[in-house]
Image (tube, rainbow, N blue to C red; front, top):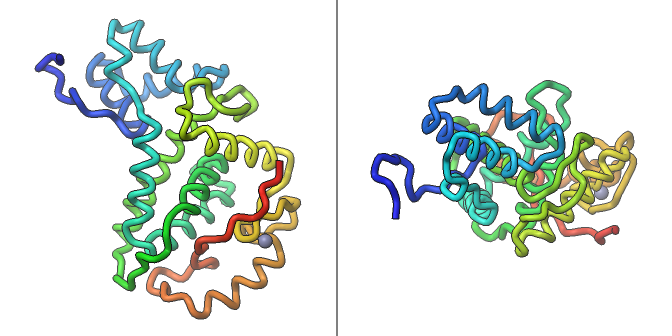
Length: 249
Ligand SMILES: [Zn+2]
């Protein structure tokens, strides 16, 4: 059973940040210090869960009580994306801009690839025309960023150079997802980009707002009849669900 003094017993953390906060609280160490140590371990090629396990054991804590469940993370992301499709479109637009940004807060491409794969499985049918508060969108976007970055750090294996493949302890049902993300990341590192709309692999230099030049030209026409125009107009209003292009291996 469980010990009563443990406030979070029975709760699985969904994000790496939550998990580290729990560990910080339970060990009396600072969150920043823990985060730095996990980062250092990961930079040397350790998976996030191995890095966390090492810290837990060092502090005499049971690693089984501090787990992240990739399957639950996927379920949570899918739930967020299915909730309100018009919000999902806006979130996609925000993330797409963040992935293109050169700032420090840039959304990492591997996490964005995860987002896109999960977006592909969301049915468009639930589309509604409810107005959304931008604070609501911001909150959801932040949660999705944390969930996807956590997920990619668990299901993919890493080295100093970045993603090397599928993590050893990636659950079977998520192996395909991890494989696609690893492949797209390798392409990306080689200067290639998979067009978000048609799936064609093109030179990164020839992309416009994450699309190949043909799809970019096309989407401007389609945007005219999109119901979502209440959010701040950005350069790019939203990426809808796209048909999966031919998978290139
Ligand atoms: Zn395209």
